[in-house]
Structure formats: C-alpha cells, structure tokens
Length: 187
Image (cartoon, rainbow, N blue to C red; front, side, top):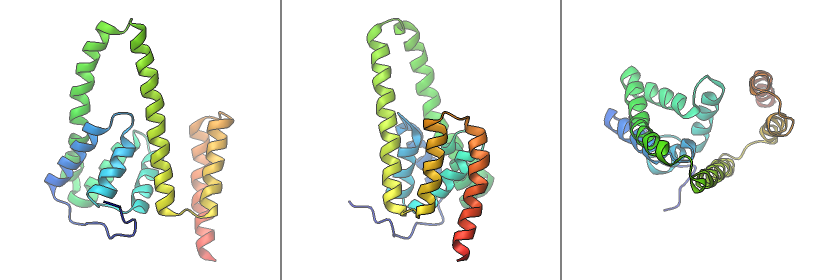
C-alpha cells in the first residue's frame, strides 16, 4: 500500500493505541528507532503527517535526551495528557530494556570472538543506512524550501565535515532557522 503524504492524520488516539504503537516502535527499533517511529506513526497508524513528524522529531533533536523519547512525550501529552506520556514511554522502553539486558548477558560470554566484533560493525553500517533512508523519505514527502536545505547543509558541514561540537552548532542554527523561517514567511 502506497503512503499518501497529504492524507489527513488520525486524531483522538486512545491510551491502548498509544501504548501498543510505542511498544511496537520499541520492539522494532533495532538499528535506530527513528525510521521505525516514522513508519509506524506516519505510514501505518497515520497519527501524524510527515511534516508534523519532522517538526516533532526536530524539537526532540534539540532537547536533551533521545529524540524519539522526546517525540513520545509530545505525542502522548497531546493525545492523553500525562497518562499518555507515561504509556508512550513505557511502551517504547519496555521491550528494549528486556532485550538489551538479555543481550548483555550473552555478550559478556562472546565479546572476545572476532566475528562478533565484525557483526557489530556491520550492524552499525546498517543502522546508518536506515537513518539516511528515513531522512531521504522525509525530504521527499515534506518538500523543504531552499532555505531549509541551506540550514541542513550548514549543520551537516559544521558537524559532519568540520567536526565542530554539536551544542554550539545547535545553539547557533536553531535561532537562525527560526528567524530565517519567520522572515521567509513574512514575504
């Protein structure tokens, strides 16, 4: 089924839907949660549009803590208040906690095997590919302006190429992006 990026998102999400939606995100989030979160929230459950998801993920990115956890807090609060926040957080964190604890026990036994190190390097590469694929899909669906591309390129150049520290770059780019967007919309 092809996802329609212009489709109206569903509203009035129940407590059970929030919990089980975020439980699924947490369970499938191997290699990075954001690609799965986008798939489930935007495509599968249609809770948000791509633009809304990108905005919430962007807010989550500049706040302390993992961006998808921050997104869970925002989505839970918007739909079911503090109970929704707690259900989203519990759902998203329950299965990873169980799985990681079990894997830690196993990893302790096999950490010295060279093939295990190679497998972990492969998993890291796959994770990077998932993040890049999700970014490209979001760009296609939200159709950023040239200004958005310029700000994104500046962030990539500053952090990815010049290796400047994240916090100062964010502290400069976020107000710059807000001011530039405000100015652009004023026209």
